[in-house]
Length: 215
Image (cartoon, rainbow, N blue to C red; front, side):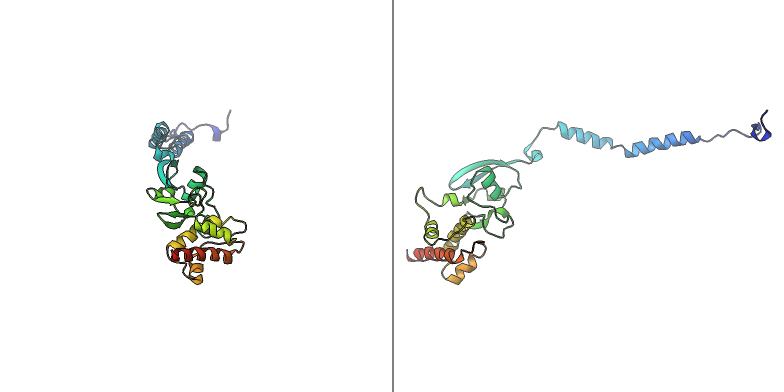
């Protein structure tokens, strides 16, 4: 026989509220609903997967560039720089990637006759404008006067910065900013030569400026 303290007391009413087990089940169910992704989000994710690819969704866009007198059609990301479009998409590797921050001038090209750092210019921004790279200066076997002057004055050593130097020199003379040595130095200061061939570069730019002034 059980002791008196273990015998159920008939006078004690049975509990009417939820049991501990029921409470835990209910709490767990609510927590699961709270942590589950919303139905709307799930529907959107499914719709995105089923939607057909478009230029905007795929991150690609079609552009046309006028480079060295020829139209070039490209399909690129809108964030592609003119420098990368020239080198990676069109294989025009004469334009060099130096600092990629617009500080060395190795990537200089002419856009609508004006010199720009192609590493800081989006390719889509150059649509409808004539673009000239180092490959487009010469006319067949006839070098541009600036190219001839660089050869004559040995305006390069390693040659990596030379395309940008030449393109900047062409624009500098055209702008009328090479009438004196000091002026040419100032307006060519955005193009760095790590080999230190500045005296020879200056001589080449000044010679072309003098030739154009005469004739």
